Length: 125
Image (spheres, rainbow, N blue to C red):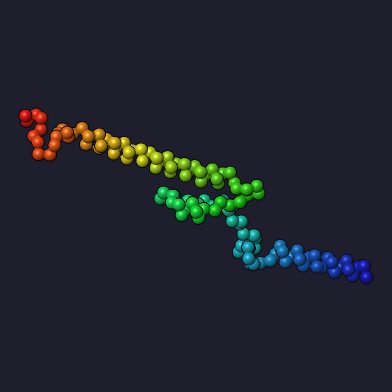
């Protein structure tokens, strides 16, 4: 009886090992019979590279989880991108405000500014 159980155990273990190792073209297998490559751990395209980031992009952003929270490199990439875009927008706002201030200053210093409508300018008097 012992020998029968031992031979049965060896046959079962061998059958399971052959099913796992030489399983043919099942899911997760390549045409050569090996295992397919695992999907990458990092997703590269979180934020659109060809246009500025919008609020909807940030709301849809989901960073992959690691063993102890989020991956620092992934978070750093997103924060670097957002920091660069905010700096670019701040520079553009400052440029537009300076341009507007220059236009206002030019408008304030125009000749005849303090004359009432219909009066002749002071140089003509």
